[in-house]
Structures are given as structure tokens and as C-alpha cells.
Image (cartoon, rainbow, N blue to C red):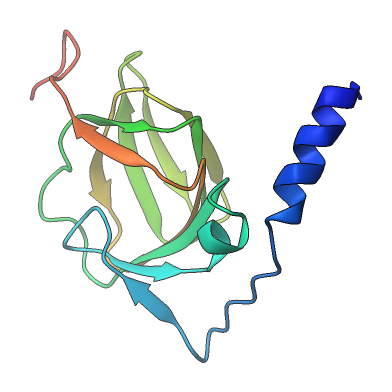
Length: 144
């Protein structure tokens, strides 16, 4: 590792602390979508903003697609704990991500969540901790 990298890593690590999120004491926060519940895992605060981790939960399927959007971040990782979600991507792919599956979505990649199972739980991690969501036009060949 280059000396500059070691210094940067040590500086970042010195601002970080341990986070322990207990299921018995869930911290629910406002999220991007009204129809999901979001459980914050304390990672954004503990990592000094370098990453974020939440569990998204739903007890009824989506009534309509989220609409085309992208996230202002370096990347978003999701792991399906329960249920499934189906997404469209600007490259033309449609993926159904099911229980036990994971998915990495690069930052700024346009996508649209089109369907979910009724009961769903997803672990979502993003880098950095602050992640913006920007609605956008559907790519050519897709309906808005």
C-alpha cells in the first residue's frame, strides 16, 4: 500500500466506531419510498459517513413501479433476506432478484423497480453513506 493510502485509511478509521444494531430495538427511519419501512443499522454514523446499511421491509407488494431513477453514490449493494424484487436496467436487462440472491448496482445507473413479492426484506448497503435518488426519463425502448 502506498504511504498516502495508509495515511488516508488510518485517518478514516480513526473517525469510525463499532455499530451494533439490535433486532429487539429497531431504529426505523424515513426512507426513499413511502410503501417500505426502513431499519437503520447505524453504519452511516459509525463509519463517519463512508457507507450506509439499512434493511428495507414491505408487507404488501408494490402497487406500481418506482419509476426510472438513479442513485447518486459510488455503488449500492442489496441482499434479499426474504421475498423478491424485479428490476429493469438501462442496458435492457430485467432481473428478478430472489431470497438469498445479491445484486450490486453501480452509482448513476438508471433502473426501475417494477414488482416485488408481498412480503419482502432487503439488506441495502451504499457507498458513501449519503445516497441521493434522482428521478429520470426512461431509457429508449422503455415505457416511462
